[in-house]
Length: 128
Ligand SMILES: [Zn+2]
Image 1 (spheres, rainbow, N blue to C red):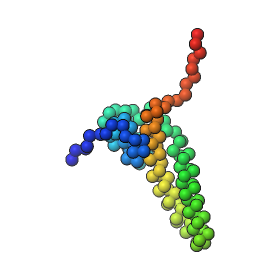
Image 2: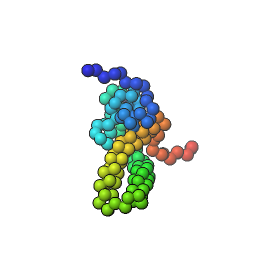
Image 3: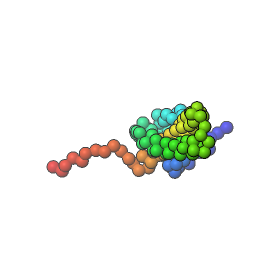
Image 4: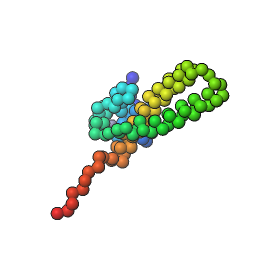
């Protein structure tokens, strides 16, 4: 079985959802569940030059926290279950949402860094 030829420069959201290289579109962005591959197997883009930092985690704290909190309050006010029901419901949901959305968020932010040519800030040397 042969792979389809890579598509040029996919949208940033597809880079995150499907793990596509932001330059050539090959499915090579991740080497594990959350770890970036060192470089693209198809075009050689060095993923190590990008630093998404804590950006995806900061977004996820707000998004997943809001979802789980609203659901937990709704279940508590509707059914008043024992405390262990909350543990059984919200711990796995939080873990699944965090892992799934963290992968997508990391891929999207790396693709946006590539497309916007984002680099670390540097001081401009004054003219002499
Ligand atoms: Zn590539």
